[in-house]
Length: 451
Ligand code: PEP
Ligand code: CO
Image 1 (cartoon, rainbow, N blue to C red):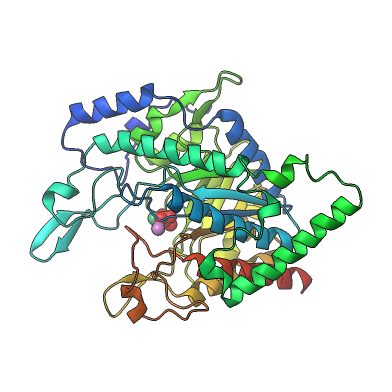
Image 2: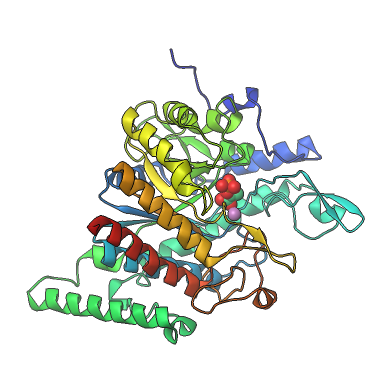
């Protein structure tokens, strides 16, 4: 018989990567506040996302999951959110138009604050400091005080998520995302570039198609599909106390949902089958993801599917492969085969970022654009070989003109990294690199479909 589950049943399991909060009473107080606040998302929305992801699992749609590595309390503005949304919408248009299937858009936004770390401490000069764990826990400044976990940050993370979500809802339903504005999404710095020109050409074609539909008598004015989009939210469900505080019982179905985001995922460092993160997420009814890195075996992945989706509901589980550019084909194929043969209806997404992080000669964490493309190419080839659907991509990006990843059409070099290196955690693709990537991904998938 299945073990009973409750929002707090994870407490009796080992939980990796939890901050050493210095003051239990202050922590409980913060969690109590968050649990009294309204849900950030609604169960019905999470169910809609699960249905959309079910279409991805069946090979009839594509998942674009993208946003910051770590959202920042300091870089929090309407412009910042709008620019990130704009680049996601542009990428989605390129993918939808080129692949001819719906693109399910999920932001690493409105709650992507917590970061797992390889080491609990970091040596800075002579100081041994607790690692930075994301703004929901502490601050990245290199001093003892900044690095001390502060539970008031849990409350601030809730409020920032609420404002971000509010703005996202306004932008996606209030006119900004209208397909008639497909030209207006072109950022200045993108407009002048090669990929900007390609985007302009595509936008012209879409405009012509809309005119054609109108000329045929189709009422494009009153069709909400053309004026609004759904952009769902997601983050790594890392700090389990926070997630528990936002877990609510749906009044319609009686099921439990983690209402901190539509979709939650389990990171590479917290996917232990007997661990607290899997225990917690197996019981909530949101669509969930799990990172799958190069050490994952076919047996492990099947057990993971059993633990997280025993009822085999399409769209419930997304496996996010992050193998590294060199290993992806060899590592992934046995996993694809095992899941396919077991009949588990998963979405397979490719995270080409986290297996390709390198250190520049100047000591900065960075990634090469070409490694990112190479990993996606291997991911697509592996799926073609196994007869499965390369369901989506999972990307760290920003709409801003940062210089954090190497290469792309601007051929950013190691010395360019010093110009605008702004991330509080991992290096992100900038607006141009992101759009460029969307075209490259569309080509990779199309050429494999036609091959
Ligand atoms: C992340 O997605 O930011 C992350 C830490 O990834 P992973 O768990 O795959 O290392
Ligand atoms: Co990251």
